[in-house]
Length: 270
Ligand code: ATR
Image 1 (cartoon, protein in one colour):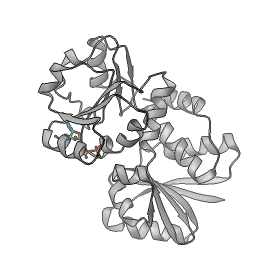
Image 2 (image 1 turned 30 degrees about the vertical axis):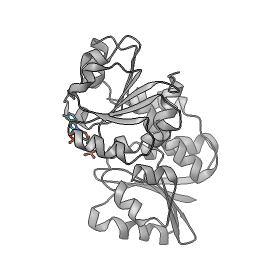
Image 3 (image 1 turned 180 degrees about the vertical axis):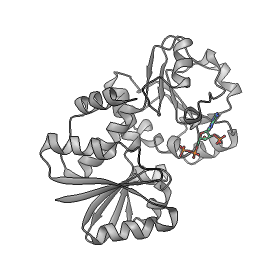
Image 4 (image 1 turned 30 degrees about the horizontal axis):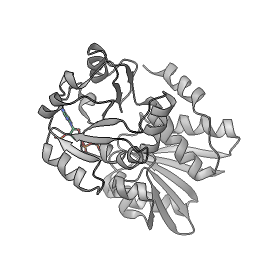
């Protein structure tokens, strides 16, 4: 049976094993998928041991996505652009790294019938989560991707990494001067129940708001967007399932169905 792991710290909360086992059952693939708690000091050794033990691939979550990238012999374009790897593929002594987070986000937006082509997107945050989704968002040919960050300089530096003129950076104060079709929260603010300093006027009754976090209750950010009459609010559970589906496809060359898996996970949220 082919073996897979997800690395992280913490990792106890990870839903990846449940998701991949559901994908495997559905597509009749014989895989075993487990989770592995690691530390920065042990991470590389742990991956190498897993390869020697016959591991076929791994997912990587916080805080090891950048470290995982350093270990790779080959990287996909989207992993290079993300500067981080969430999917490792092991074959004949080479380690290939990919990043499926952005595809997971874009597919979830599409599943909600959210158009991105020719739309103005506000991307909140300039850390790894934001950086990871820029290339796949750009591939949908939006009119503009505007990055906003608490530390504006970091937003400017992130925008400057991409040569595409569609990507610009602003401060939170400047969000009062524009409106957006899609607003994506890629900050870690929701994790500490904080609200970024976004102007409510940049959200209209046509705006779709997305938060990369998920939970049984709406995040403070999505509650705030609802209060300000956003057209649609979406949490990150679909992105989680979507990134897993893309990893599964890379490893098994079979595309799993996501709808039922998503519904089951949603019903188990507490
Ligand atoms: P991740 O890998 O999840 O992106 P990160 O690299 O630590 O984590 O980035 C966290 C992001 O959330 C940053 O953009 C951070 O803004 P700063 O660069 O100014 O620190 C943003 N963030 C965290 N808490 C926030 C808050 N309360 N309001 C606004 N932005 C916040």
